[in-house]
Figure 1 (cartoon, each protein chain N blue to C red):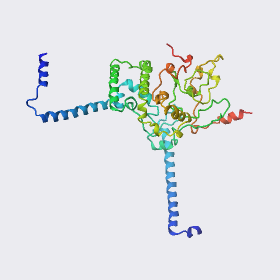
Figure 2: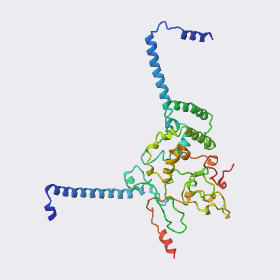
Figure 3: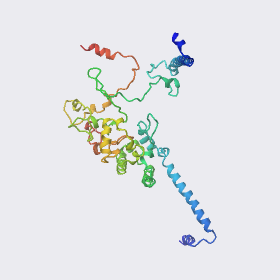
Figure 4: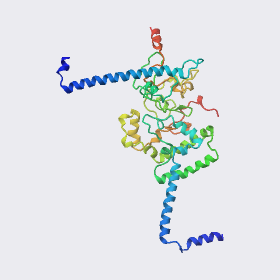
Length: 182
Length: 206
């Protein structure tokens, strides 16, 4: 209080206006939270069908401001880059870059442009990147081939880009894996 | 024949009633109207709405475009069909439009009016576009993507390497590496630099 008294007039004014602003924002935040709570109570009721299990993705319209406010900040954010260590044994390595517009279908496979190992059949414009494991060039009977095996062709079935997103439901998967480790 | 001759004689004879001023000014005004009308009609065929008024274009290339970065992205800048497929400069545009009259033929006779027919023609159509972009040094890409303003530090290492070497020296042009940037790729097995990346096990049944 001594400190406050020692302030000159305009400084006191500044402090009190700061307090006022803080209170106003706190009220606004409380109101927003209440609105979101109401919306969350309301939304599941929209399409409630007693015969269907409740979907993880709640029925909602993107034009609803409450829904927009609840979206992750950057839904199309770039995946994490750099080294991504395996989080559990046998995990297919994650993709540390965006795979947007990378085509993998019968006509072409963009991944092979950078990841095909030397000596295997690949597009000629190969660039330096981690090699596809030779285990992916072995067929069901264990015969090595110069072609990527058909079972391994659709890379993104196992190797996924890692986005900054929270799990939709709680999981104890990692704990259960770690418990099994010696 | 004699009727035609009457018109020919009329054209050859000096005007006996109309003034020189009317003929000059009238010709001038008619010229403006004709030229403006021609250009307006050509511009009308140069819109995305016109392109996708055919179901062939709407359900194949346009549908494929919609998931790509050239259609939907953070900042909302997008390319429409003519941005990439029609040159902006007038002479080249008219030349392209004359080529495109073949597409009217294709529409009438249903050359690609089913997904199967489209798929069968995909390689041929894609190669035609690749050839065009290779011949004009990817002019349509460069209408928006100016090499001189690229910040290599914002690009991936591979992209910066390629852009600062083969692209700057003119050994390669955009389309050489960026095939399939906006549409599904055709069967790439016969294409230079792409050969045989599809395993035989996944080969299509004939």
